Image (spheres, rainbow, N blue to C red):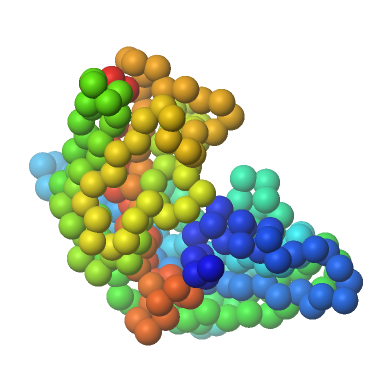
Length: 240
């Protein structure tokens, strides 16, 4: 299995190999990467940047704290991702994205397991980044009862993950695996597609927000360390 470091995928990986046995050493993994998105501002499209910090392990964790090596006052507390204690995550709040890239350099992780074991990890944040597509559209095929999301190719993307949120911003669709490789420009899904959560059945006329995340690995780190997550979004009405 490829070591994909996208949250639910990572959690699934360690869920398969962990057994909470005391004779198995705590073996966490940590990653720091850039997040990009675009916003319209007075008729122009601006690029904004945020920071993502991610840690997951083969044992349940109680806390993950991160400090920036060259700034003693910069610290971050990660939280369990959807209450999964094997998978902790932090991302810059939407309102705090800025026109400047996050501080580059070493991010030092202190990871504490429920077993009492502690690990010190570090990941260096580099400046390379990919950016959201300049065009994303949605269409609905009435005969197939299927929604298709299309977008212009994102240069240097390695793979894509898709998520769908309802009108209350609740996650309702999240496939357990990446939906495709970096050169893809189209994805189709319907009510019977695997990934709908908590019995959700999309009804005609319902509003949803689709988030298409493009990921790029660090140079020379295919399948291991992430460098960028580029957020692409579109609002859809199911059945239109």
